[in-house]
Structure formats: C-alpha cells, structure tokens
Length: 128
Image (cartoon, rainbow, N blue to C red; front, side):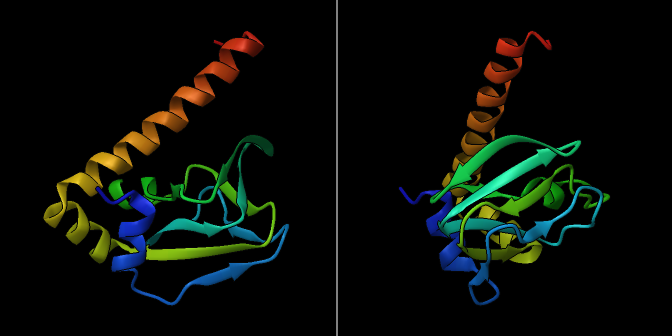
C-alpha cells in the first residue's frame, strides 16, 4: 500500500520545490491550491504565531484547503530545516482520491494522527 507521500510523488503536478529554513510555505488565511508531501526535511505548523507541531519526512500537509469550498489555509507552514516537497494540485488530488481509495484513507489517517497528537498536547497543557 502506498503512503500518501508516495502517491503525491506519483501524481505531483509540478516539480519538487525546495524551501530554506525559516521560509514560509503558506500562511493562515491564504487560498490554497496545492497540498504538499515532505520528501526531505521538517516543517513547523503554526496557529496564532505558535508552533503546534513539527511534521517530518513522509508526512503530507495542506490538504485541508483542497477540501473546503473557500480553499483557505487554517494554519501557517514554515520550513524548519531545508525541505524538499512534492506538490499535488487540487485536480490531481481529486483524481488520486477517486481512483485510489487507499490514498484517501491514508490521507485521512495522517490527518487523524496529527489531530490526536495535537489533542494530547492540548490535554497536557490543560487547554481542553
């Protein structure tokens, strides 16, 4: 079974992109037309100027904007280290979801895993 990053690399619509440490990949509130898969490096995800998680090689992110009608980003993504990212546009994302249901399941699992990690952090901080 292909992991989401492997499917993104198969269907990617643009050449891989490289981001330097500290470089903004996208910002909260921007319209998003692509999702990303981390081939190399680490990406920090921010909400309200606070790091909420660090995602690593093999993870996918940015897919939320592709499934909402307004296409808006709900967080900010900044390269923590030198990053090489695969990019998948909405058209290819929808094709991958439709033609390879396991891709959709793995993206959901990735999203759920990240949500669970965030919930544990929030529980530990007593914010829930």
